[in-house]
Length: 207
DNA sequence: CACCAGGAATGTA
DNA sequence: TACATTCATGGT
Image 1 (cartoon, rainbow, N blue to C red):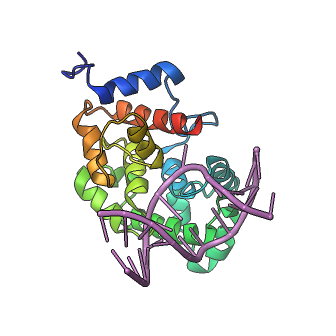
Image 2 (cartoon, chains in turn purple, orange, green):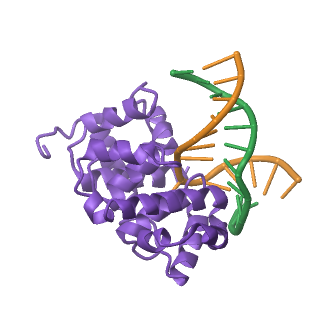
């Protein structure tokens, strides 16, 4: 019994098995590398879209060298500097799109008083606002919410879909149904959500 | 040389 | 709802 949930639940048991197999994941970015702050996690959530983590990390490393590893710094850039900015994040691929996405996100965050202010907003309402931004879909929004803002929301990605197939956990399809499936069967615990998703990614990479 | 990686937007059926 | 295409670099 953990937080009132029976550990016989198959979804929770799958988590325990992954934990036993791979050990407790580190904080974002989970496997090696140095620790990221909330702004860097937010930025890297976009940099890593459809890109392997190594390339996203290369881009973030260059942002650090230019002291652009914060939304406030990116939000201060004028539009005519965006082509220059795009070269800095070039290793992450799709760098023209990602330049626009990062810049519009940074401007939006600035307009709303910074990440700490934004963090005070209710989860569902905040999630909707993130989804309304260009280039932020459900996975990126939830990644920002869970790992940068420490909100209790379960992240679903391709690995998760393969995982539930592999273990026959559910036939549910679509982002939200799968997300609700996990959330309904797990204690509403942020660290658990973070570790579980990280472990699923670790599992997916190892296959 | 081909293939893929810690997605999302857009268009089609 | 379910697919297909586009966006692009760097590793294997």
